[in-house]
Image (cartoon, rainbow, N blue to C red):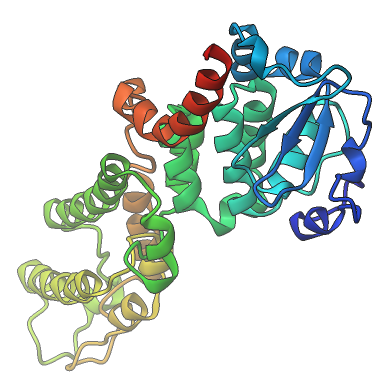
Length: 330
């Protein structure tokens, strides 16, 4: 297997005899069979060193009648696909691994690594999901993967990458459905808190919208130029802009502050003297400072990595574990 192999190419690299070419040494004592029926010849010692699950399995007492004939490898069928099983075995046998550039493939490998208690596989997948290529495309899904496993730093970084996304858009909703309800709530609260804190900052600081000094000193204008009048104008324009922002599904971020809606407000002129009412550069600077002061990451606690999460993640593995261990105990 070359380093540039993709998941699809791995599925095709089986010999006519259905034995995977990278694991075709018949002089082994274990034969693993993938979901599609592809055969992998592996040494039990290799599996025991890399996997706590297999180490426990091989240590169980076995019914003598269940022993395979002399010179015949014991066959164990697993539920992983050929591509996932090939990648797992490649990692633990120090062979080149396929390109890890697809989030589905990486998550399948991560789940399998956790199932078989392979810390090397889990560590590699933890690094793989945090590559910029994946993090920029799937921040919501990676946040869910990290938060559910108690990966605090990774979860916070991924949540920061979601700022500016519309969590309920058609592009994001599929990834959002993969996030546990607790962590989904925390992510949505982050976005809501940012909006509420921004609104509160605008309401408590009337100087965010900086009045144009030329407008304030205009002498040939038929409208009053008192400070109170400018404040009322500022409040009206803030409310108008914030109302538009609230109607938008997107999250609050600097692109919103520098967007067309704000640009129109800051270009507004007095009906009397036709001077611009606001200092655009100063106002944008203050608005950006307010955005910079907002929370940028979710609050993730180690307690989230609960027994319930572990049970849900491993419950799907119990049937095959029970079937194999029962066969050895009979």
